[in-house]
Image (tube, rainbow, N blue to C red; front, top):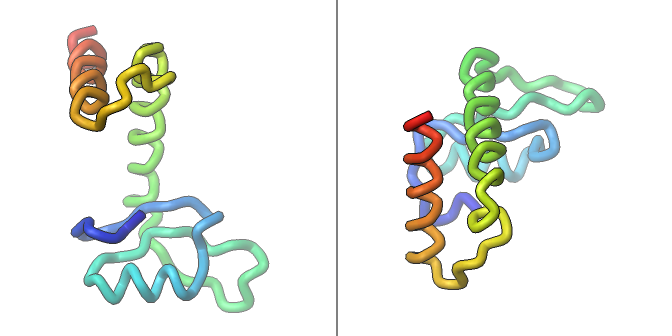
Length: 95
């Protein structure tokens, strides 16, 4: 999922806490903002303040999925689907 994307930070939940993934993210020059799993012998530090931003993205996705056309992906082509995601986002912003 991270191939072809440039970012300053990659925010993910505990399920993605693995040394190979963190090395790959840091190899691309990004910061891995992934909290360590409880069973990690040496917990990795992470930016707790930046990790809280993940909640905003999840709330937006929840709001987007309230639009049935987006949730069920009626549009099969990528450009048309992205267009409806934009329309749904505008509708959310206009509330």
